[in-house]
Image (cartoon, rainbow, N blue to C red; front, side, top):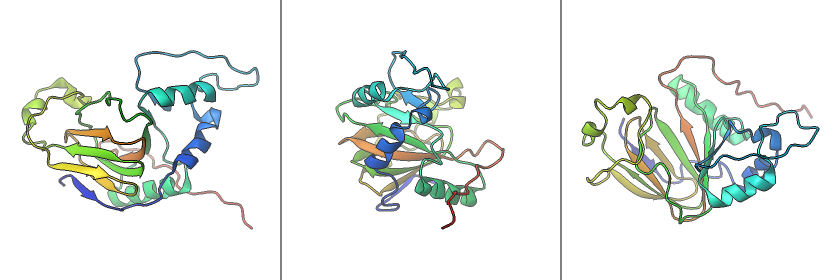
Length: 217
């Protein structure tokens, strides 16, 4: 399946306000889940009552999120809508998927990954702001992939000269489908928030429990 783009495919999936709420739940903000795209490592103090000492404090997190491009993994149950969207993907592909929340508050930052490819297909939903997405033909850039040991691990900051297959401005609700090994680049036009759903096509294992708990009323 080739890359493709659809406008207004999934409106109102996730908002800054919902994300703000999650960021303030410190036990969710583990250093395994939070990926700050910076070469610097960070240390902090913990309250005596803290059970998990590896959770970013909100004051530090607020500072880092304004300075760097960041993403958050293991977020497929972050909200009911994200959970249900993940469930629909899993029902379609019969494979498990995760949800990665990407954010960039400063559109003047260069994305650390540059032009890169992923090892699994992704469905990306623009949630807030605008992002310019470019996707290049895998076949035309085959020499960049074949024989490269990084084919097994992904590749970043690729140099590509040909015209992209897709060059689109994504607005809230828009979707782009990027198959594995297709080089692509995300360029923030405004502060932006998006959710990527990587589909684990090469892995077997139990699916996430997609039941959404609600008290009976």
